[in-house]
Image: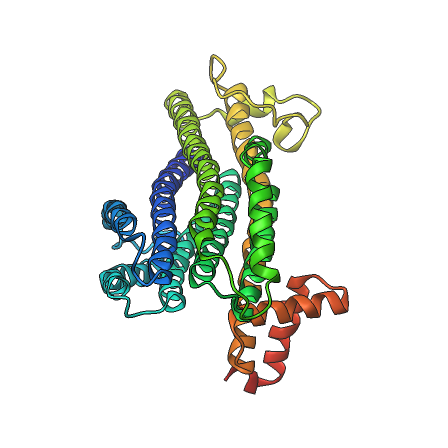
Length: 431
């Protein structure tokens, strides 16, 4: 017959398996982040190439494509290493669906590149194609964060996802601004898009600061030199305040691209530090879990097959909690005391109680972290509903919801919930 300690050992083995799966997921996220960074730069160079009608940036564009191909091969290898046969993969259905979408996009990437090289597509169309692929890659990171069962790792994944999303908005700003400068003409629609992208960056970076460690927050502050920010703000003002159709200095396109690239490269440095911290936490937790498992196994080997119940109750102290245990029985200590009897049984029960408290604490913290992810899901669903029902763009739908939130003095998530509730009351909104 299996003892309680046997199930403690089994629980610890499950925990180790989950942590090892999270370590693999974290490695997948890291490669995904590298490819996103590469594609963001490729997208910006594509816009410069198209905006100059193929007269400039062709060598740089081709060199960046070569770099992206190497990282893409690494990501495909990571996908191949995933266990697609197991039905117990955390968030498996959504994660695998996201990966299938990404693979479809990667398969279509050579066609996109061919259209850019032939200058058959506009900068806006090429940008939208890159945005869809990068959004798919970020969705893989989101599902990885949503599947994490350890709160500390989950917090880091949420911070990583929001930082990557903010960096993607910065990349879209770089691409849109590059195309505007290279075209030599201001465009009101693109100017509104730039303002939306700037606002979206700030929102994502705010969530990152809430979930990242103090050290990572400090690193991000240090990686924003005032000179770069001042130059970026100056060029932003030029782009966003020019009258529709007004002339822009096309020679400033590489200056804008370089300024934005410096900021994004500094963001990549923070992202790399996030990746290292994520892997370190996974490794530390796996090592600690293995240590606990060894202690549990050693304790299990020292437990006698039979316990003298009369001796147990005779030795119990006159006061204490259930089963004669003292009220402070939760004090830890994995090494079993010498001898058998009450002390050994008490040690095992202490382990059970400590494990229960730890899991409860982890569950509470994980609920807090998941709340941020769930809010994002609700906002995205409400935004999609507005886009479909009112024929709005993503930027317009988000702007509409933010305006409703300001007018009603409510949080964005509350507006999203109200929009979704209205869809339940009025089914035609779902069509």
